[in-house]
Length: 220
Image 1 (tube, rainbow, N blue to C red):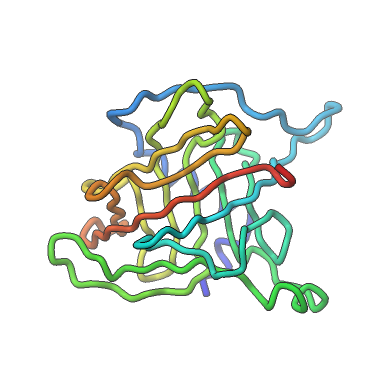
Image 2: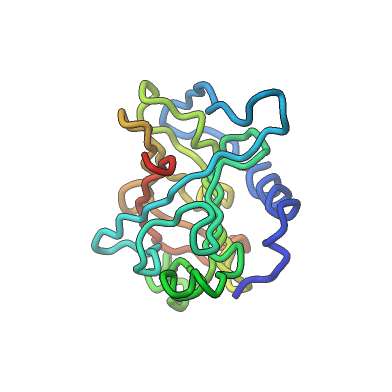
């Protein structure tokens, strides 16, 4: 499992800043911004907006769930939210908190994502299939509106010591597409093959890593 360093809120925000500081650049799809969801209220301290992340797992996808359904904020130890930074980034940490004894009866223990590195690019040596906690960030999802259509964004999956998988922040990698749906949810997907490449942060190991997920509010 990943280091405890990723479990603190300060580490989460610092990592987001590190990953996306150099993610800007031409995209090829229109970049639009819309209003952020309202956070907090009553003049008190603003709070993060809880989310649900559901992976669709089409044939050939390389980033998959653990087979136990959607990842919902504060359920089975999951963190999934628009955090306090105001950037509109989606963050999702499947094993952010230890699963309590009572929850284990329904959760079956900590959750994770499956990341399959076997489809390499340019004859790079294939990597393993990993079952890890896999902290995830999708950049600026909250600012995408229905009217903007598909928008290209950066994404990152902090797998473990093997790879911090980058979409868009490392040369050779491809950004992901984000669309807002009329029901208020967002769809995040990699671009069509061969533009579905994520690179490890070392910039040497690249892999076709297609995935698709829906981001929604709890109960939505």
